[in-house]
Image (cartoon, rainbow, N blue to C red):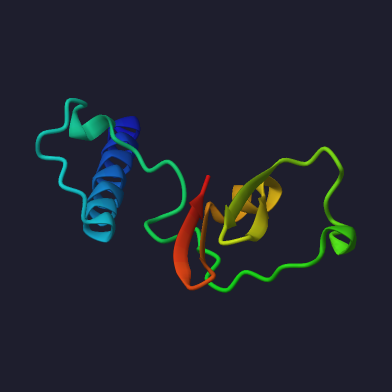
Length: 108
């Protein structure tokens, strides 16, 4: 009997969390091919990973946090080049920037 009660509590807790997830994310999963009961949260909530909105740049020689073999995403436009290190994008995933008056989004 006690086991049944614990299972019910767990089930109701999962239903509550699932409902909260749907309300917070605003995703409509009415036509999902996976049963709703099998969809679980898998990370931060919507907008849980902050974008970099005002990136700061340093000269290549001053980027002491980078190693020579670290990967970057490079963008060049209008004669200006910028590098967005993957080790930073791993934590933020999105950078909103403007190069020579042109708004860009860098994502990984």
